[in-house]
Image (cartoon, rainbow, N blue to C red; front, side, top):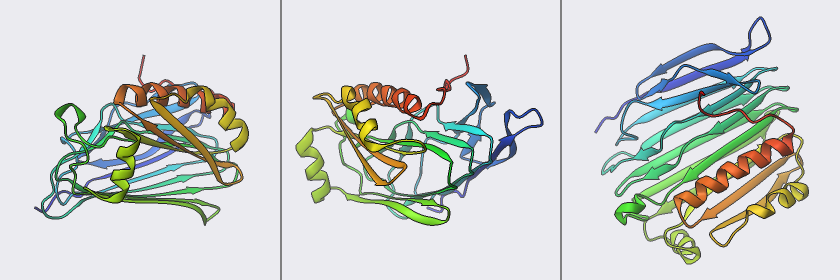
Amino acid sequence: MRGIAGHLELVCGPDRDGRPALLHQSFRAPFHISKPHRDAGALVVNAVAVSPGLMEGDDLRCTVSVQSGAHLVLTQPAAARAHRSPGREARLTQHFTVAAGSCFEYWPELFIPQGGSRSLQRTRIDLEPEATLLHFEWVAPGRIASGEQFAFDALRWETTLAVAGTPVFRDRGDLASGGPEIRALRRFHDPVLWGTALVAGRVEARSLAESIEPLHTPSCWIGVSAPVPGICLIRVLATGAPELRSTGAALRQTLHAALGISQPDLRRV
């Protein structure tokens, strides 16, 4: 199967009144964006998928640039899915550039790799010093309600964070059905969902760990580390989608408070 080559390109910067605005936008199926709205000093953009999800052979590209003085939130209104790929894997390549004095928040919905799917996501985040970042990712092991856990053929990802052009953090994963990593996840709970948050700005790992400690429960575990000063990595393991969603929402609120910035509403009110 050939698949499709879609793209999403966004450039956000201050308009003539100093408010965040889209200075450039371009998209092609399966990407589409709803009408952006402003809230709490940020521009909120919902990226809508016009297809049922990642299909065999899809090669998608997302490029976002946030200019100095702007605050952009990129989110999704619904879960993303990867469908069965007996041939070529589905690929998503993302590149986010965040200038000094700007803030970028990426809040996707849950990613669900379905049975027989093969997917690869590559993400590069380029930060300038004094930039603020909140980058979230949430993953399910499959269609839990259908009893389909870890039935995908391959789930691969690579996330690279660079500051002033120098890579300072890289996260790689390569999960194959029945592999040792999956057996380790299942020892925590079955089913298990997981999330990752990368935070850059005026944050310190020790104080942040103290702030999110109340969110740690028997059904949702959270850990914090600091790859380099000013950057924190947060891992979340949850026993179900409701637990992951509620903890994620509380974590987002906690991180905005720790960074000293207002929390924009993800949906237009």
